[in-house]
Image (cartoon, rainbow, N blue to C red; front, side):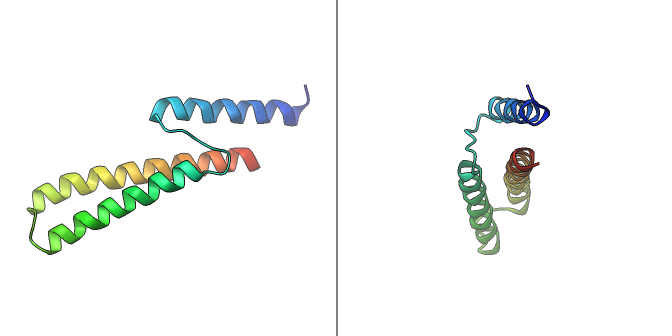
Length: 88
């Protein structure tokens, strides 16, 4: 087995491990992650609008917003790691 082939198999194994850990389906072009990131982004924007419109309390907003943004950034990092490991 060549060095490049071994590296690719390791990268594919790392992606599979991320799929299992975060429960998300990963595709080679990152479509699933991009869609999930967009959805989370839209949810956080909607929550922000609710705060500005006075529909929710600041404490509730902070709790939900922090969770949404953490989810977004976790997905973004997973997407970047998968993309980098396949091209590197």
